[in-house]
Image (tube, rainbow, N blue to C red):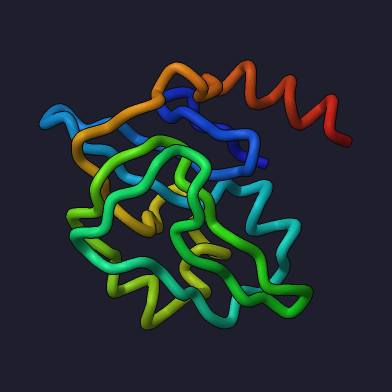
Length: 126
């Protein structure tokens, strides 16, 4: 399982990539996609909506279940990845290259885990 050192993570298995312009990309971790199995459908929020950390951004339907996607940080949605909506299997094949939403006006970054802390969290959870 991959855990890139340049990303941050939530305990609900979303990753965050902070961009130089102050925005952040959000996606599902390798652990999450592996646990879900083959992803068949992704339902995401709309651009312009504002969320707090922990709010539901959408859900993922896989062969095993429907799972909520949580906002790992608060912010306003400025982009939704249409490519992933059209081809949800991309999250299975490239979880860290398949972002779901982009947020601006970020809040709550201090609750995120770095790659080592996320690895420790996964070990405790197992």
